[in-house]
Amino acid sequence: MNWKEVPVAVTGGASFIGSHLVDKLCALGASVTVIDNLSSGTLENLAQSPKIDFVRLDLEYASISDIRKILRGNDIVFHLAAIHGGRGYIDSHPADVCSNFAIDHHVIESATMAGVENVVIASSACVYPPKLQSRYDTDYQLQESDTDSFHLDEPLSADLEYGWAKLMGEVQLNAFIKQYGLKGSSVRFVTAYGERENETHAIVALIHKANEKMNPYVIWGTGEQSRDFTYVSDIVDGTVLAAEKVRDGTSINLGTGKRFKLKEVASLVFDLMNFHPELAFDTSKPMGVVSRALDISRARELLGWEPKVSLREGLERTVKWYVRTHVPTGKVNEVLLMERQVAPTANPIFSSTSGAPMVQRGEN
Ligand SMILES: NC(=O)c1ccc[n+]([C@@H]2O[C@H](COP(=O)([O-])OP(=O)(O)OC[C@H]3O[C@@H](n4cnc5c(N)ncnc54)[C@H](O)[C@@H]3O)[C@@H](O)[C@H]2O)c1
Image 1 (cartoon, rainbow, N blue to C red):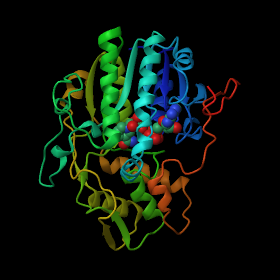
Image 2 (image 1 turned 45 degrees about the vertical axis):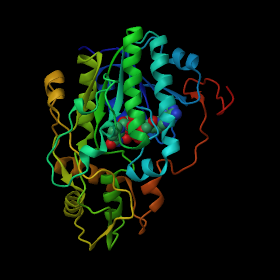
Image 3 (image 1 turned 180 degrees about the vertical axis):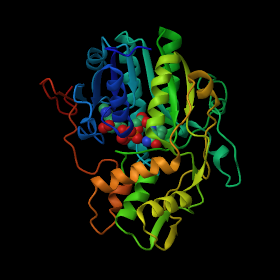
């Protein structure tokens, strides 16, 4: 597909994954509008792509007609805006995470009304039944059919409110496809990591603690829990390919199919940072499902996609970035590990770099 000057909008484009997606779309030549309320995303994340249009908007509270106006004229919407964080955050903020039901509805309905051709939504491995991920001694890879958002007459089960909201996002997308002929796809990300991610997520939390020389070094849970850690550039490549190749609402796993225990990842981080502390395990902390990895055969088949970055290589890049951008304070910041939004924001509903008026939350 030729992306030159294709108008696209990225909701949540100032986020960790969103900003990498924006960088890639700009490099491909697309004409990009970012919509974000900067509640956890930052303008600094967008510094590498200065030519974008940026609209500061709260997609939970803005009216459908405001969102529709901004989306009109875009061929593709990549929908990544979400109340989201690592396990500690989603476990302790169940009500906040429910905002995602509203955010997804607003974006999907507005995109449909604006005549957008194609909506790609950021879904998650949290849409899968926790029961399939409850054993340490397993090599089971979750398949898209384990949670089929087209078959609403089948039992469904998802991981916490966050997983249910992601699943309902997929259900909503499919409903608009069925009724209004919208086109789109859902890409199911799993434990993404890389530069610009925050400390609520496992890998960046591990790096933060090592950067602060925590000793004894505390790992949340048993350390035996395993995940399919996927480097951000692979996630972004798969997302762009989904926009190019899939339009019937199909859900697609984007992972590596490999699983690593958290304590193995910690050990790689220690090697890279030349730090070898004593280990302690805190099983009172949230650790999520026991074991999770994705089957990626559908992504291979439909997208011709393959993850390229090994865990070691991705960790090297992430550690380098973290150490370069974070000056140690000598103390682990426990708030950073739990809260996606550390600095309070004004949380405006609407403002833009083009000087549009700012409307404070609740005024519309
Ligand atoms: N990071 C992962 O491992 C992972 C895994 C699975 C799925 N995802 C999904 O991928 C997407 C991006 O994830 P991320 O890790 O970059 O998250 P993030 O927290 O960095 O990004 C969320 C973005 O949405 C914006 N946002 C939140 N509420 C908003 C609102 N009401 N209006 C407008 N903007 C709002 C935030 O400011 C932020 O830029 C999210 O949808 C997330 O659920 C991420």
